[in-house]
Amino acid sequence: MNLITIIGQVDTNSYIIEEEGHAIIIDPAEAGNIAKAIDDKGWTPDYIFLTHEHFDHIGGLEEIRNRYSIPVVACEICSNRIQNERENLSRLADILQYYKTGVPPEESTDSFECEAAEITFDEDYEMDWQGHSFCFRCAPGHSPASTIITMDSSIVFTGDYMFFDKEETLRLKGGSEEEYYAKARPILDAIPADYHIYPGHGQDYLKGQKPE
Image 1 (tube, one colour):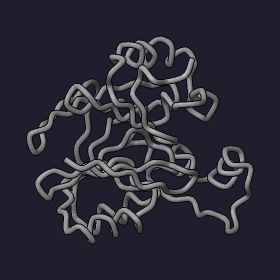
Image 2 (cartoon, one colour):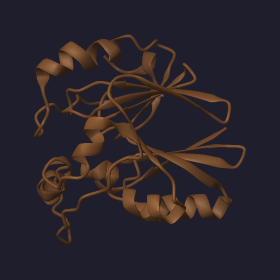
Image 3 (cartoon, one colour):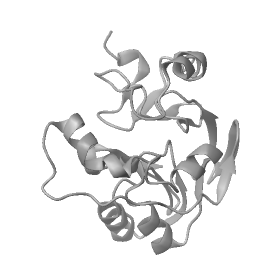
């Protein structure tokens, strides 16, 4: 298996998982570098997985989906919210980019909407792919659509949770501190210490290595 990271807008991590020449793309922030990596290696993409609906995680979604004619897997709330420029926050992209980076964008970002996901779920969802197992768990807090994706009981894609060296943001539109502590936090706390964490921003790490 290969697992590579592509860094997109607002320093968002997109991930490509490859097995036997087939690939899954997680959070396609920007299409160009993802497509180049896949095409240069001759891989065949099978799915796109989404951890949540925010613009910086789906900026390349439609281009990648249409380029390879592959389905998107997301929770039902995420599927609904990527279709709305207010709820995917793309209308606020320039403001949020400046807030996160301190650097104003050189060009203004157009707001956008995406098509619905082809495969959706309301609660937990499991699927197998190329000998690997995936479990999707709804974990609202950062956003209503936030989802934790566990692979093979050893790797976790956490979206905008569990950054290595900073706290999660719960103050964006749709965020909820109450839901975070009631639903997301118990899931995150239950991740074993030796699991490999791949967050939506920043470095990956073993959970037990995270600084206090």
